[in-house]
Image (cartoon, rainbow, N blue to C red; front, top):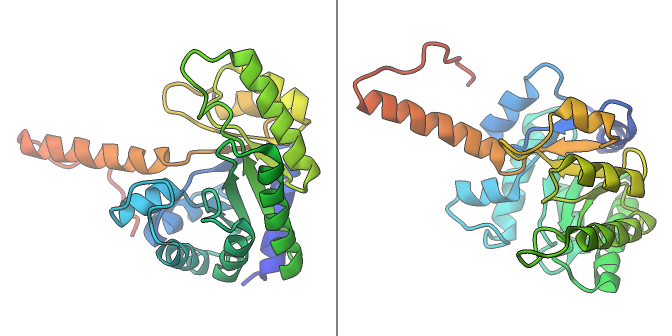
Length: 260
């Protein structure tokens, strides 16, 4: 079993490597074990939306933090890979939440800025980075800016790019090794952000039917590609399709593998 420090260093190194880090987000122990057992997987990321949905809660810090952390801890104990937790906006105290995530076994985390005033968002990033430093690990903060997600419909994309860059650079200066910009899928926008933030500093989410292939994102200099809630939606889509086929008089898919 690797130590927490080893896992943290491994996760940080994966973000700066030439090969893009691909993270299929997980939400419980069985999904974590299936993903971890897939050849080529080097780290795991949890999805807050998916964990909340598993327990019947809406996304947006509606799931109690204790319950959220309990699942993250179960996932971290079930695998021998680095685990990074999506702790949303930090549940009111990003530093304390990061400390508890580390205690649960996470060596990285996502933190949303929710377009708070920049000085407040930077202070939150600094608090999370300090929590990792105090724990003696290289905690890998995936600092997320919601510049695109919270923009009004029809907002100028150029202005949104500029704001994402402004916030992203501030987060990097505050100690975050990577910046997450959800809501960006177009090649020119991804390229602009990757160039403005620097090589292996940009993190994006893969959106079904919209995002560029991973190999192209890597060529643009992206550090990390995750799937967020979409991994769970892929699994649920397969479940619903199989149920429909059964109800229509059919059978379960012949290529189904026993994975648990």
